[in-house]
Amino acid sequence: MIDVAWMTRGGQIFRAPAEIFKRWHELPYGMWSCADGRQVLFNRFYEPFLQRRPGCPPEPADPKERVKFCRQEWFYGDEHTENQMRALASSALASFLSRAPMGEFPSNLVAADRECRRLHVRPPWLSEP
Image 1 (cartoon, one colour):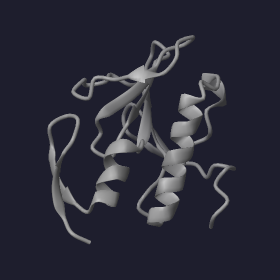
Image 2 (tube, helix red, strand yellow):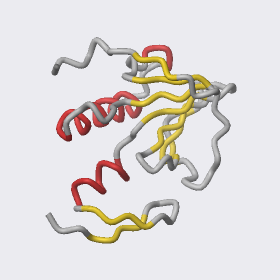
Image 3 (cartoon, rainbow, N blue to C red):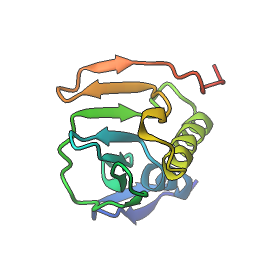
């Protein structure tokens, strides 16, 4: 694998093989939930890239916005293989884009409240050990 310098939506420079950069940049790492009901997907660089508000379709988010969230959730962690990370992130993205009701969004692997106290959850849709 050859490392290449990439620039993120928010202007960060990142050196990595293309497949790693693609996961970090284009797939969600987690989601922020805001007090007004807005949900914001963020990538591995913690840059917002998609958002949706109650009753509205998903739309691009400002990658430089500092989102004031009340809950932060992650879709995968370091304990997962690269293939698991891609599968979990892709599944979360598909669910978000499907405009499923917000209350039916899949349970997440790791969540934290505003004070970033971590809550560990194993979702039922994760079939691999």
